[in-house]
Image 1 (cartoon, rainbow, N blue to C red):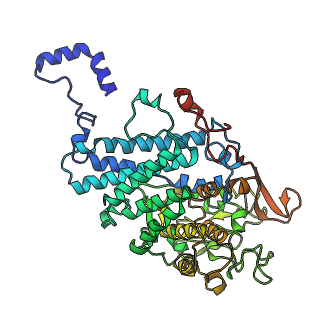
Image 2: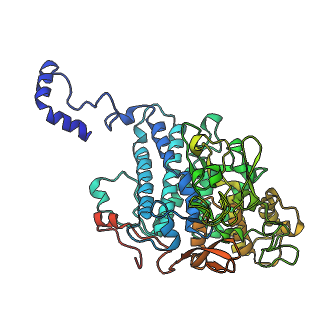
Image 3: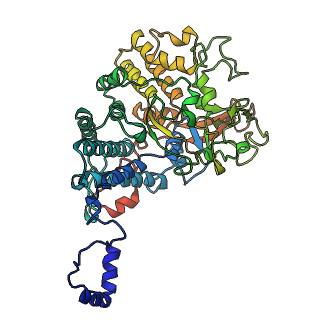
Length: 534
């Protein structure tokens, strides 16, 4: 509209001529070649178009996978453009990644508010459809706010489209108040049935009532309100109709998208909407650069087939000389190590050798090779197009996460028993490929909280959830300080007990549990206070 008004002003002489010819023409008519606020919301298609724009901002492949580089699961060797500084603790109030998260999420919130503030103007909508659009946009707005407050703590919270002056003066809302508002919003769309339980094939990928309940459970888990989590997760388990997909490895393939385990994902489509996240993690032999790599600390947390951690495994259960034998099958489905392989589209296996200085994929052979000696296998799409472009959907929420939250919430309250174990952890391990009773049966008096946390890490590795977990557990200060490691080379120099030193990290518990409010935003808005010790 500003450009339109400027054009009118600069062309005033011509306008006088035109007005003489068409004196009945109204001066406030909107341009005919583009939508404006004068007419946009009067179009029947406006609501659908606006809610689809909200979906485009909810998340993306890069953000999901790179999230684990801020944890003890992964490392990125590329500074500045991603979140390496957050991972190693060197980030500041001017960090570009931190600022990009702030901007990205508030941009998404603005898009949701645009729809929610104007949807009543849209003609031709049934009450059911209008409520559904409100439910979808409300969910996405809650998702954005959750991403913000879980990182920044107190944040500006608003439900209207801010004016320029408002944006320069709004203050931070206390986190507890934000949490209450988000839970209230979710309860409203859940309890009033704004969202359907399922959709037809033409609307695959849209947000359901169950996804809203799953997000509510995540927020309650983050707030450690375990007693409130259990009724929500129990309702999903009992009535949601979801099930674990038969193959853990197959869960993350194009051929098995939108299966009964997926509750919410980022929908991609070959040619029309693609990503090339594979380039970021594949070995050079498959055309990748491998700037995102799994860490040895993640590899070490996968248990043996008979249910032991490798630190406590009895003789014969774990062999350090053959470390990938007799291990949790999810290790081979998630991480590439020497001898493991990618299944190609023609059915053949592409075997990888990550050994030191082995061409072309070995640790240290080239700058394209993995910095840890490991590669990511999860989310490998063998149907990729040129330049590793992929239409593979990126899962944001799945049924296994609901089972794990249910088990964890019970364990935290001392209520995880054999019945609930069989209903959750046993099912997850059976699907993974465990068959030994020592891995499947309820472990009795063992430390159930630690067991469930390890299970969560290995089941959901590289799916963007680990960062929130180590923050809410307050374990980041333990797992994000000191050296993180790559594969075992046996070398004395530059290693710890033969394991490659990758990065020396620092996590200051007095400041790093909250990110800094970006300084550029504080420069524009003096009412934005800063987090402690930044």
